[in-house]
Length: 317
Length: 225
Image (cartoon, rainbow over all chains, first blue to last red; front, side, top):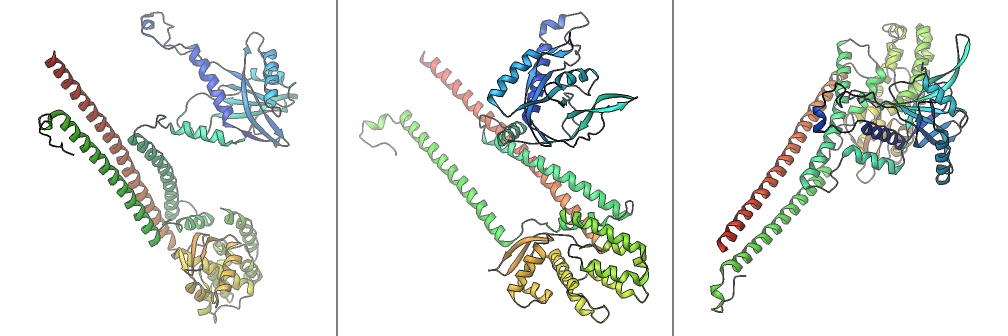
């Protein structure tokens, strides 16, 4: 059903929208399947909580700004789906739209979203129903199935186009490409979630471990890419792949940038900073030790030194 | 990268022309290719069959010129000026640019003296003008000029055409890079494990101390009571 879009619109998607949609879906899903308790294990009826119910589809509206040929989707809100009439709750939508207009006067309803693995025929009804608010709404589809092998985001944006199929002009969904656009606040929050830093500050060891883990994953990615290049060049040398000069030139210019930093001045500065850090750690440890010793001596005095006081002798320290 | 993209169209254009012409008709083509201000890659043109056929014929000098531009430097030209045809100023400029690229291959820090010698430039001002105008503005080189220490630090240099032996070197460098990053990954993992075990041991130690304190407190309170 989906071919690639020819309308020439560029779509920009904000991460807030994706977080909203996935949050909506997760909430509905966890409300549908209450957590398994020990009493339910005795439920001998075949259809206990163990049988996975089909994942619910959630619906909502996306809002944003359209400037010329660029459509930027900023935010989204949820809508109720009425399966009896197979349409979205219109009154609620209008009320929500009014409320959002007061806070964000620039944002218009650009389309709607849903979850699922692929666009379906029934979605076209909802799409047509929304066409009176926006002549060409966009349909954002999030695939909630977790696929660890997949590298891209499971979000697709569909537009509707009029195509002639079997002699009848029909509206069908066509796939469009999009880019992710972030505001500074969004970038910080996404970064935070990605790293899952221990929020209480943790002990030094956990912070160190977290920092090292992030470096580790970055280097791992670099490593895999270099490996790909290496295999490619080996194959080229063996003759399995014809020489591609442009690529070889780029690789040679890349390799020329190694080693990235190597000069006497760098070594000097680096070693100086290294020894400074070691010195400060040593000093801090010393201070710690001497204060612990001091406490120990005071406790010793308090505990054992009662007799000498009568003699008028001054206590230790 | 951008230079390659800029060159890609021109390389295609010249290749098409070269494959349709033969013999001495290639002369003006070679001249045009080597004077073109944005073309730095000649190995594709060298690979076109009608160009390789020039070997050994009276137009072999054309092939040599092309090879000079693909792999050689300004000093090579000066050494062989007898055998190669006279170069027009555009070609001389391009050859000097390519010389800078070759020099950037071996060192990251190029002293002014070496550059002045290789490029036949007498004063520093002219050298810097050449580097800034011809090399950096055309995007083939990126770097910093250090006038106090009289050197040019290269951060990025576009690739020249590969000599046949260079592929082996590149593979060697790549595999070295791979082993280094592998080792680094292993050592980072060990460090992470070490940090975790140390914090575990520390917590355990704390707990042990507290337990002993509790015990002693209990025994004391028992003694008192």
